[in-house]
Amino acid sequence: MKKETLDYIVKKTHELINAPTCSAETKESAERWLNAVGTDNEKEETIRYIAELEADIMPIDNLINFASSEKGKEYFGADNALSIEKHAIQIKANGAKYCDCPACLIVSDILDRKNEML
Image 1 (cartoon, rainbow, N blue to C red):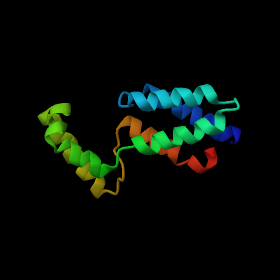
Image 2 (cartoon, rainbow, N blue to C red):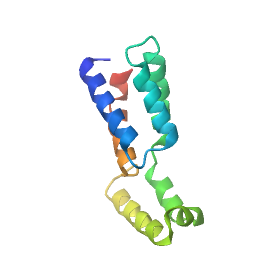
Image 3 (cartoon, rainbow, N blue to C red):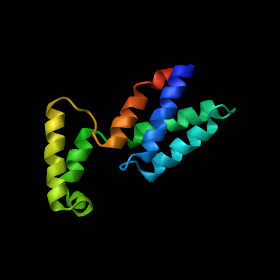
Image 4 (cartoon, one colour):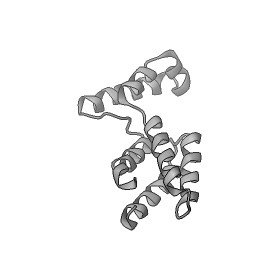
């Protein structure tokens, strides 16, 4: 991976770890990848990291469905779930494919450079 790409991904990975909406699994994968940078395991961990990011980014339809479900209302609270659902419907209408929470936005930025990482 080129130094410029590596520096960018390292920076974004630190941002991801600190994002309030980052899942525990994604944080763990991000930390494993950071620890592997510059080692013999870097390529293998890069492949795992990308796979984790692709699995964890929330497609907008999934967010809409979850926010409008009973589980979503329990998780977010009824009023917040309704607000999230309305917001998700609006950003989908504007072309969004994924959730726009802090973690998903950072994951999207990283995945935009997936080919450069490999």
